[in-house]
Image 1 (cartoon, rainbow, N blue to C red):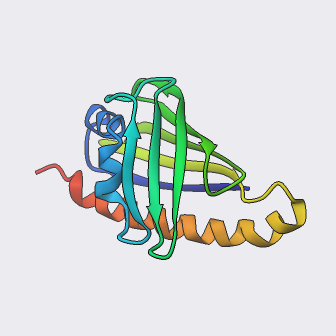
Image 2 (cartoon, rainbow, N blue to C red):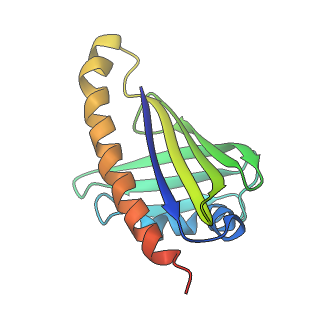
Length: 149
């Protein structure tokens, strides 16, 4: 399944791209639940083949999410791909494009919740709705962070 959500931010492409190369910023823009913690990062700024581990804390249980940066095209795209984590398959593209004096940022996530087709048919739409809430929250926070004065 593919999830896609975009936002136009009133900032320059350089600042926004550099912001995304520091995974510590993911904590700053994420909703309070599930609590997100950065457990490990191989390097900052991120580069192609960098790795990181985020911990999703759902209070009653935690999930460690291991990701690799599979693509970095300066000022155009950053892609993280799941090594191990909460879904069967995950690839998240952060795309950046100058537009209308600002930057259009597109979050595109290709995912499959389970290897079993029937379970995925049931669970993928739930994951999709969760992603909608997550990225709506993140985009609202980013609108506040990236305001030109």
